[in-house]
Image: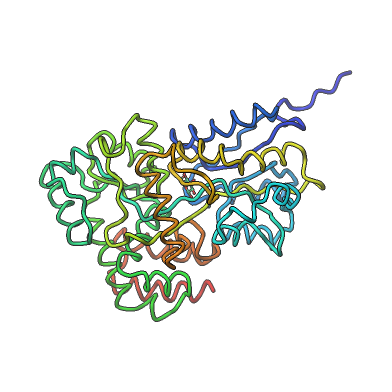
Length: 403
Ligand code: BGC
């Protein structure tokens, strides 16, 4: 009798990749990777788990690995990579391909911080995203006076004008990671000192202090511009509201640009990208990296995938579609649109001037336990459970308890 194994099992030349790229723009970017791999004879087995920030993906991944069924590779962010490397020891070692291809010379130190563990390469960074962006419908902005806001007061004036013009000023989805994504930008906009002392240094006085109360007050103000149906809405549906002109703007990482491009929108013509008012020159970044699961020696397919991901031509093609910028310093900006060129220039400027910070919302400031403690308070406040003074106190207490 012939015993047939499941058709679902990946062959030696396939990679099964766990990721959370489930929107239209994200799927288009994955298509660039799949196509590139297929030219190398490597097939793609998809393992999508929706949810920005990757919390749900990490839960599914843990179940898979605990059950002895690790995927070939997984998308991972910042401190989750460190956590997986330290707590499981199951991540593959990519030193051979990294050394052969000279990754150390071209990957910015801020990313290497997460790609390496104990001196070994354990992840291949495919991009750099950042969270302090605003995506504005161009016609809605024109109808609201036409000037992109440069500071908080100008932002409020534009939001008020959009409201008066009868559209939803702010497109948002009420999910903890989306609330936290806005909070990244709002805290940075109050001051970079506040961002650094609260989220990077976890300083109790900053977490519970007057400037943090101010940041929460700004969140309350932004909450007043969101429509009634925001609860639970996926981020890409919020992007669609801006694309369709039903809403004026979205405050979201530059993966949102992938949605605008997928809908054939042109930067400067159909939409406008700006840094969150008051944060120009500063960047809260996150980098999607691929870790490989240890299979003894890295398989040919794993090495091929790591090499593809790090190839400069691929990094240009992929990031043009994804909305992010390359994870290497030697990729020309020629093929990028104006928002992408700005993203590359802003990252370089922030990196050299000390204005580059890991995104709290997307796992580049703290381990998940602390990130989740912050998420809980930010969402409870956004949903009206705490006033702003209470929220700041609760934030300091929650972070202290999670440390
Ligand atoms: C990832 C992006 C992704 C976004 C929304 C972020 O955490 O870094 O690549 O597009 O979540 O899914």
